[in-house]
Amino acid sequence: MPGAGSAAGARRRGLLLLLLLLFAFSAPAAGFGSAKKAYMKEKVRKMFYHAYENYMAHAFPHDELKPLTKTFTDSLSELGNLKLEHLPQNYNGSALTLVESLSSLVILGNYTEFVKGVLWLSDNLRFDVDARVNLFECNIRVLGGLVSAHILATDSKSRLEHGLYKNQLLDLAKDLGQRFLPAFETPTGLPYAWINLKYGVMENETTETSTSGCGSLILEMGALSRLSGDPRFEAAALRALRKLWSMRSPLNLLGTNLDVVTGEWIEYSSGIGAGVDSFYEYLLKAYVLFGSDEFWEMFHSAYLAVQKYFRHGPWYHEADMRTGKATYWQLTSLQAFWPGLQILVGDIAAANSSHREFFYIWERFGVLPERYLLDHNMLHPTEKYYPLRPEFAESTFYLYQATKDPWYMKVGETIVNSLNYNTRVDSGFASIRDVTTMELEDHQHSFFLSETCKYLYLLFDDSFLADENYVFTTEGHPLPIKISWHEKLPAAYIPSNWTSLKGGNLAVGLSALSQQVCPATSSGLSISPQIESACHVPDLHSDHRCRIDDECGIDSSNCRKRVCSMAGYCGLWLFVL
Ligand SMILES: *[C@@H]1O[C@H](CO)[C@@H](O)[C@H](O)[C@H]1NC(C)=O
Ligand SMILES: *[C@@H]1O[C@H](CO)[C@@H](O)[C@H](O)[C@H]1NC(C)=O
Ligand SMILES: *[C@@H]1O[C@H](CO)[C@@H](O)[C@H](O)[C@H]1NC(C)=O
Ligand SMILES: *[C@@H]1O[C@H](CO)[C@@H](O)[C@H](O)[C@H]1NC(C)=O
Ligand SMILES: *[C@@H]1O[C@H](CO)[C@@H](O)[C@H](O)[C@H]1NC(C)=O
Image (cartoon, rainbow, N blue to C red; front, side):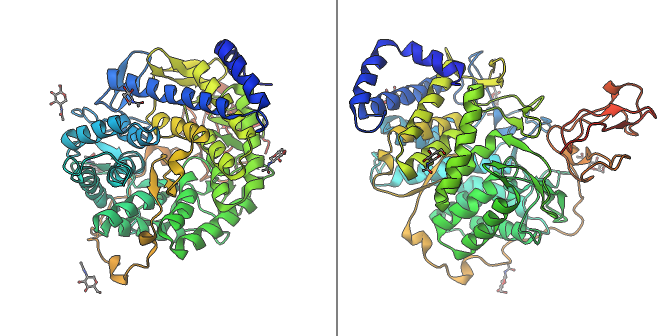
């Protein structure tokens, strides 16, 4: 059943589309002729500009647009910060959405606006700010945006006059990269998840990070090193990646959360979604970008392990890295990137079958819900949102590129119509808070411009890819594949002792998340005391005593509400896996 959104969206297109459809049906490409393609491309172009121009009008130079209230949010310091702790008092944004839009402007062919943006950032963007940011988010969005835009500003297609552009974006990227380096000064070389751009690692900073948080830095930091000639960025990211890989289990599986000081796992369960996703992505893309066999060998082993332990038909569940036993049976919106990655490996049939399942869920809800419980065949009780995520559009683009099957363009059309119908408002595009009601949330994420619109546009017009090969970062920023970056580097390029490690008195400060680990239940039904997940809600009393069910929380091992037993303890009665 097609989503209500796409049906109504189709109605609104009116007569023009009827004419186009007649044309399309007469074309040989089984339902998606060139006029239809041009029409869809124009529709996506309008979406991007609706998002971009409203950001510029109501939010720039702040970070992101709040499209319902026509205001802004300085969200760079909030990204990944669920508890909103240590927010800066005096931070006025980093023009995040503009940084994220630059490569999309080039792909849409708008060099005039690209040049304007580059020059504004060159003159105004500064990172000497008292803001604690998430290293991973800042790396993929800001560093990646700057590095990619620098390359696009200096390539032969750019209209930037040499006199105007003196590598200012690269200088900004170098400045930012240097501010990242103190995060890597840990006994393990694994970086802290958080860094204050002005002051470095904060006192009592949490030592907990995620696999993707410390394992997906190599594309941006490697590119920065190759462009700047300063090997420290690539060395730091590579050292962290090697350490992380050394922590894999004998099954070649990794967990989701770990401690950067002790190098021990905190969360042993993992899958291909949140907290892990871009780790796999970057192993393969690093191989494509830098050509080193080391990345391919890591990726190959990791990929085989994923297919062996996480895959269940077209679905991917999570598993415990130590045993390979299934833990959570959940589909998450972030997992939808996986078929795209499988296209890069050449695993088209597997990509196609998973993509179809995601499309089925998309059609059922009109968008992809954040989390869907496969074992109970229902939405996750709290994670019912859709924040304009790109992953499904991304995979659709890759599948079309690999197969040229016009069916994927029809999928793209469904996505475009659904986004316009459900999320477009007068001043931009709003996130969806609840996919069952389509209630909106006042936030236009920067990745809507850097990824969602970009991949949809590339689906209908891939002329940007005509004369150069690119790797897209996990934030959708293109990096060209250069033969010179594949050349074997001298051994001295990455010395093993480049960093001054701090002394051994680093406090192990666990975050609130890690301290919420469920105790093993007395019934012995808990899968593992270490396992926790985003649905976890602790019991009201820390000794787990209760009088009524409402005093009990939600069990992290299966996202079920705990109930109050006859003996007065919170526990699990219904146990299904
Ligand atoms: C942020 O803006 C406020 C109000 O315009 C200004 O007083 C403050 O100095 C600015 N802070 C920074 C870091 O630029
Ligand atoms: C480029 O972007 C600007 C700002 O959104 C817009 O006014 C202009 O029409 C765009 N140019 C093209 C060729 O699309
Ligand atoms: C850091 O933790 C120590 C020990 O818990 C505490 O005494 C100190 O006040 C904390 N410092 C900050 C800045 O939070
Ligand atoms: C994708 O799956 C569909 C449905 O099973 C099938 O008809 C189609 O041929 C597949 N395409 C590819 C490229 O595997
Ligand atoms: C790193 O090691 C090399 C060779 O072992 C040595 O020559 C160099 O001085 C060391 N550098 C630092 C910063 O310790």
